[in-house]
Image (tube, rainbow, N blue to C red; front, top):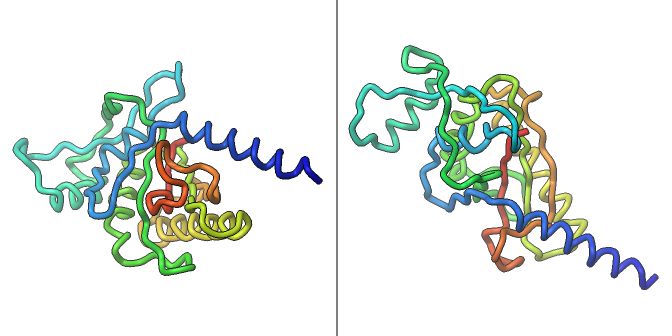
Length: 204
């Protein structure tokens, strides 16, 4: 019986180390999500793979662009301003991005406050080639039991997938939802911290 806690501790350490090795672009509440940055992060090829072509948007106005204009333009990915071009990768390699998707308490119901960021995320996914898939990872903080957190994180990941499919028209075959529970806190964070209640996205 003594082996089970030891194995659980080792597993948690390995998973935490994996999370620590990742570089995550962490958006916070109220941050404007740039669809072009989303496409650059999710569209990165694996190390050593050739660069991939992705859709980008040319704005007619070369001056400062308001966030509302950027979001509106990014959502209109099919039109005269959309074309294929190489989207520049971030200066430092980032493996994934996380959004602080707000849900109702003890629920997988997405609150209206989360929709603007998710809509911009969907616009970024539409900039990617149709063959590019995205993994949606639900994460929780360390409060509650392991089983509860795993189930809640899975329900929330599937809720985000459903939103992207139903509200934004993303092909469901391009999205894979998984629940990660509490096992991959953000690097340097308090496992019980609110920042770990998040939904993380990476390309595959």
